[in-house]
Length: 320
Length: 320
Image: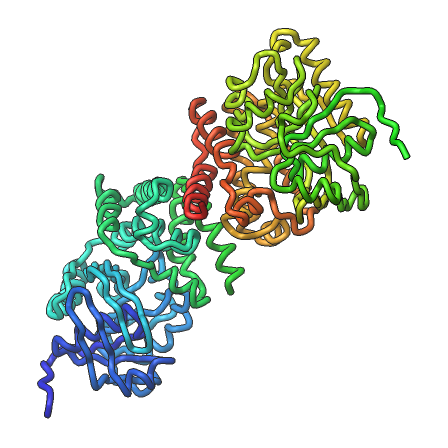
């Protein structure tokens, strides 16, 4: 039996964890030519494929998988989706450069602020760098097995590359990326300002990621207690304040909307909780230190967020 | 063999935990007529006495102990030292009234703000109510056994009673109380303003008590990490700010002095940590809610302290 592969861009997935696995699998099932770079899970995925248990899409399997243990073995890709932890971005730059086709688009499907800035100087100039914000509840439950609880939307924005000074081309690239996701049945939109999009995402990440570690609690537990609810709201308000100081107005009601959306999630453990449980370094620079520094540079102190960051830094170092 | 008991005031200890046990034992050994009210530890203390293992005073034993399981059996006392948790103060009022001699002085050897206000309306008018701030590192290690790591100073202030409008008499009563402690070899001083004294103590209690629970860390661990040090300093600065808003100027350098003093403590676990470990309710009202409310009423927000209070409230409820 042969499978019909549509002509189209070649997509590389760098880091096939929960995020890379989910989006890569969805794109591959939609007929795209998707190549997965894996490390510890290479053997399992080669043997059994990728398994997605989705509350939205049902149980889906991808097998065989175009899986690689070494970047050197991968064909050059037109789009690279990076789903690794931000804490390893700089070390990952040579791998990205190696796998990228000339003029490839590299999309960081990661949380936090300023992460593209850190990576940019380590990438060839010819590559386009984009950021992607994933509004999704997803986690790994085993090698090559992804559990998808809710949502899935991806917001894309252009960071830098040869289209930096060409608004129309920038826009076309971002729309093309969003189009790939939409063809795979995933809600996706182009964002005119990546920093603005990243600040929006922080409204959720700052309270829920950090408090899941600090208080050892999932979203349902955090949303069930009056004090943690107030703390979440206080932190969200500070992120909105920080964004404003940095020139990004977040619409009134947006934080409340994120808060109410979380009310409808069931027992969701944010990624930072999983990182802490597995003694991986926490993404504190991207989610806390960078936004705090940006706000401070704009003359704005965010004391609750800073206190949370300090507490998490203590926990992170002790956990290392 | 008979022991020579000096004539003098009769002293009652309400709550013979670490604080009540330490000061009661020291006063009894100095020759004062001290009577101890106990609950769960009555049998052990009656049988084996009180044992103090002190890094300052050596190993001291008091045996026999004038111990009581019921307040009704105690003789009327001229001074009552209350070393129980603030969370039980209102329920304790009838016991205090029962044991107090006419015109007795009741001293709350407790942390926090406004605790005398809560108790006052439940006490007979004839009683003098005082507050005492204990600068001491002490904890129970077993029934009737007290471990004393460092310090011991008691700052006393007058709260209310028939001397409220008689400054000289107020002063005489507080000096008399401080004199009792000094006769027992304990550094003690009269404070002209109890609220001011209580705000001073909060400079230490707010960061160290709460963070010991939130981060599961003792003073040495907290002082060894750059992030927790910054968090402690940020919280201390907010307490100083709150005190100022409430009309109590804390001298420049005081917070730094508390910080440096803590640097010299070895592996001290604050009382709130022990409360949490033993699933007792945390003293959040006295140490956090009351000061926050007082500062807010004076137009001053303390966001770090509030965030810590909210996190601790969440933890406390889940622990109950």
